[in-house]
Amino acid sequence: MAAPPGWFGRATGAGTVVCAGAVAGGLHVVVRHANGWRTSYSFLATLHVRRDQAVAAGDIVGTAGGRGQNHDGSVL
Image (cartoon, rainbow, N blue to C red; front, side):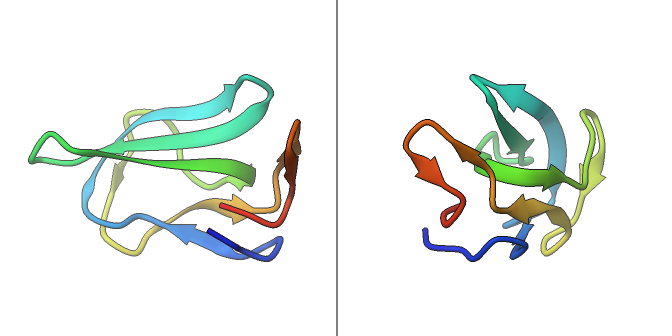
């Protein structure tokens, strides 16, 4: 999804952060929801959550703008 650097990535629903950190050279967040589904947020420039943190729908999990192999900071 196109996203300008600094754009806030927000949780799609309530859940618990099960991953927040560097994976393969980029910053990622994964939220586990009560129904067992997970949402992933990748290519982040910053993290605003930590592992085991509860989040509500709309909470900021990080900001777009992460760069890496094949990523120029313009996607989330």
